[in-house]
Every structure is written in C-alpha cells, then in structure tokens.
Length: 472
Image 1 (cartoon, one colour):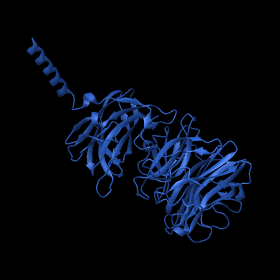
Image 2 (cartoon, helix red, strand yellow; image 1 turned 90 degrees about the vertical axis):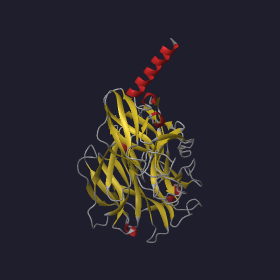
Image 3 (cartoon, helix red, strand yellow; image 1 turned 120 degrees about the vertical axis):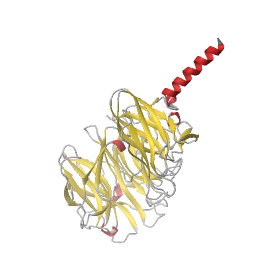
Image 4 (cartoon, helix red, strand yellow; image 1 turned 135 degrees about the vertical axis):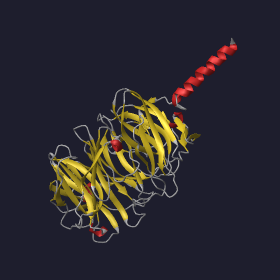
C-alpha cells in the first residue's frame, strides 16, 4: 500500500513538472501599492505637469528636439504615449543643444519654453513655442521667437510664475558675456512670449556648496506657492558633479518681486546627495493623481561620479511650518516607496520565481526586492519567463527592476515577448551591477493567465522583479 501511494505521488509530480515550465508553479504575484524609485532609467531636466484632463505631461532634455509624453499615472510616464512635437530647422540660432524644455498651459494655449544655441554655448538663449490644440501632442507648434530682456545675455532654464494677477519669467543667466557664474533673474511678462521689464538678479552663487565648481552655478529655478509664501527652489553647483543639489530662496506673494531685497536665500541646501543617490537636482513639482499629495520629480546621477549620465526619480514631500517645502532626502533606492495617492495598486512578481532556462539562474542579492535576483542571461537560449494574471483584457504597464553592468557601459537589450508573440526590444540602461533601474513597456494582456518572456539580444542585464498595473 505504501509503495502504491509513493508511486502515485511520483506520477502526480511528474505530471505537474511535464505540464508546467520550471518555476512556473512558484510565479505567484504579491499585490503591492509601492514602487522602486526610478521612473525613467535615462533622462535629465525632467518637467512634469498634471493637467485638468487627468494626464501627466512630461518632457526632458533631448538635445535635438522637443519630445512630449503623457500618462494617467505619474509612475507610469515612461510607458506612456510619446511623440516628437517639434524639431528646429538646421542652421538657425536655435538648432542645437536644446536644453530643459518646460510645458505650460497659459491663457488657454500650450507653451514650451526651451534653451537652445547654434552649436556655440555662448549663444544659448530662451525660446517659446505655442500650440492652441486641446491636446499638446497634436496640432501644430509655432515658434513665437526668442524671449529675452533688453540685455539679451546668455540664458537657460526659463520658467513662469503667475501670482497676484501678474506673470513673471525666471531663468538662469550670465551677468555679462563671460561664463564665470550663473545667476537667477526675474522679469515681468506682458504675454506668454514677451518680457516687458528690465531683469532683476535675485540670486547669485554665494555659499560654499554653490561656489565649488567653475563656473559657479545657480540654475533650474522652479516655483511653488503655499499660503503667502513663494518658494523658489533652484539647482546649485555643477550639474556634472555629485555635489549638485537644491537650494531655496523665498518671497512673499504681496512683495515687489522685481526688487531683489524681497527675496531671501537659505544658507544650506534643502535636497542633496544621500542614501546612495548622487547629484539630485533640476526638478519639477506636481501632484498625485487624486491631488492629495505633493511630489518632486528630479534627476540624479546613474552612479557615483556619472556626471551627465542621469536617471529620473520621484518622491512625495511635505511642508515646513513656514510654508516652504520639506523635501527631506532622496529616497533610499532599495526600499520601495508608496505609489502616488490615486494610482492603481500593482502585482509584483519576483524574478527568482519565474521559469528559467538556457543558463539563466537566481542568486542571492541583498539589494534585490526579494533578496534574490536572476542573472546569467548570457546566451541566445537564455530566458526568464513569468506567468502573470490579468483581471481583464487590456493594456498594462510592465515595469521591470533591472540592472546592467556590461563592460564598456553600453545599453543592454532583452527581447520581450507576450503570450508567444514576436519579441520587441526591451532596453536596460547601464548603471552598474546591483545599482537598479526601471525598464518599462506597455503590453496587451488577455484576461486570466499570460506569459511574459525575456531573452537576451545584446550585452548583459539582470532582472530583480516585475510590476504590472493597468495603463489607465
């Protein structure tokens, strides 16, 4: 009798292992309302704006064009729809080095403010595009021209402040024609593309954390108003260094903002390198989907000493008693943080529980979300296959926590196949092993069980975990 029962058990085990790929029976999901804090694995100078239509609109420095993205979730922006909406004509004074674009909705129209030059940095100036379409990713963008005060000096990082019925332009610029310091300036606007007053210098590099590079830098001004306090949060020190950080100057909403004495600078940074995150800066402010939370979106170096090789992060912040933002410190990269309030929860699948083949293997790793990661995805036969479940057929955001430490610092490419379909390229930026980023895709899933398979295409990358949530 005992022998018969043992044989029956063995037969059942063999039947299961023949039907299910290795590891598939363990590839269960954990429902979570957290994410690991990288929202774009490659990018700099992030600008995110939550519009009244429920979409987040996003743009960043590309260098050669204006690209817009939009998504209904803050954390899913990398998998949102994206389009190049404007490319400058060759041979113009604004044909090269397009930096730090910002998208604003003013007086019922869309405007993009960006810095550009003709290939020579000393010719950097600010320019304005206009679009009357309800959706800024459609319709036509018209160049309104250069936006400048009478001095027409070097200028970058322009932004707009509307307060007390008046509108102001703020930017980073040179006092003269020598690249020794970048100061912050303000001037009044008569319309969204015209400055109508003399410029006023409201901040200059003063403290040791602002004057430790050549040139000395105050740049990237962003304003947020709470109560009667205007907080202008700016980036200081060289953007190419780990010392890049955020400083603060403040003014009252009823003050004469064109008077430099109305502005007071804080003597210490309010956001700086910490928790293994280096050079945090050039940020924007936005709200959670339900409007209940304030969030900062910022870039940081992808690894210590990475310079201008950066990624984009986001985290919630609070407020001090004086109505200035309390940004705290950059969130620790290996501890998940709560998703923005109003975003859908996720299903998280650990890679070590997936079906592995062709040499792919799980190993212990303290920085991994479940204490283990999957690597050795080294040959054309290697694969990592997740069995995932969707409550309804539709589009989902797939966010994989990935790492790439390939020699020479190239991008790695995996093939991503859903339910046996043709594989698409799935890109993993270099940040070094166990210095995790987030690679994303928008995928269509059937109701019920689905397979998601990763295979090697070029170079080498590892997978820690996989999050899936609806693309709203």
